[in-house]
Image 1 (cartoon, rainbow, N blue to C red):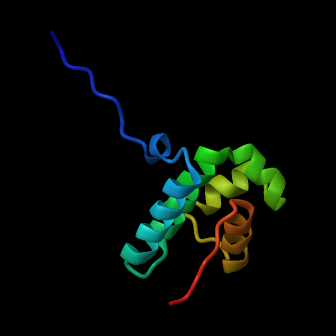
Image 2: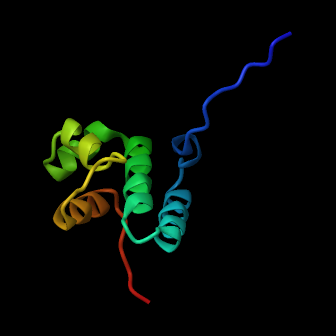
Length: 94
């Protein structure tokens, strides 16, 4: 019998606010300095919460959000902050 594998997706593990916060914090700590992990984390959290709702809350189109938070994306800091606020998250300096 052949084994069946499914693709692992972080979204499947981001059901609670606590897990989303922990995930973003881990990505902030491990980001190599180019924002790639933070961008990926925000994209995963956005998909877990619902990209359509986030689009309404930020005033940015779904397509624009997918583009900005993709691996090739290069969102402006203002866009990142709008997304973070709309997701109910906060950035803190220590």
